Length: 298
Image 1 (cartoon, rainbow, N blue to C red):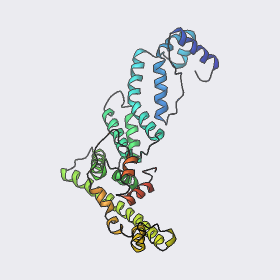
Image 2: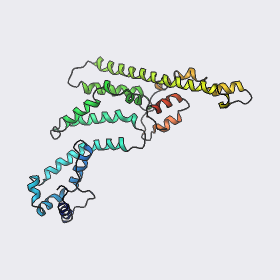
Image 3: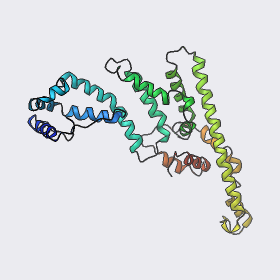
Image 4: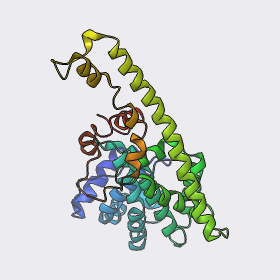
């Protein structure tokens, strides 16, 4: 149909003649964006009753496309729409959310991997899934090539922590080696070793925040006019309480205390912002670290 004004006008008339009621109209496609493919297919499916009528009004239509789309064609379009809908929802969740979602990246990515795996042997999708799986494997197939910050976010999600991260690494390892024979102890040991590695790296990251916090506390301690005393009758103890010195011993184990606590469990109404806000007194430096990796937009 292209950008022909007359053809667009004729197609709209065909919609009326075929009694097709839809708020959508035909749209173009960007081959590299699955969302645009989904929108193209959805609009075509909604307008399926129009195409036969349009072919009667525009003799050139059938010559241009070869054959008028049939019932079986639209059934295939419907299947492809259902397959691509997950990608559309994931994209919208990532791009349109007003909430912090960095901590959910891995669970969304693994859901896509599972979706591709489910359809890779389906004859209806064998022409498209292998290329999509190759693209997935290129960016997400090997946990050793993914930024550590993605995994830091899992540890700093109180719903997940190390327990879920081990599940993530196990699933990624199995997907990567699906065509290879793996021993049970290998499937168990490699993800566990990776979890320990990420925890150690996060601990190093935590210590930089701890040092920064201690430096700030010392700076405040050296500036008497900035100290707000907790006890007006005891200037010495009041200065100590506001200096930041007293948490230093416990702060060193603050991250470990957080990680050692059990995950809070699944809750549909869970809001990570509220959780960290409510626990900022207990884990003040961990909260700052979470801000530092853009997990929380506090």
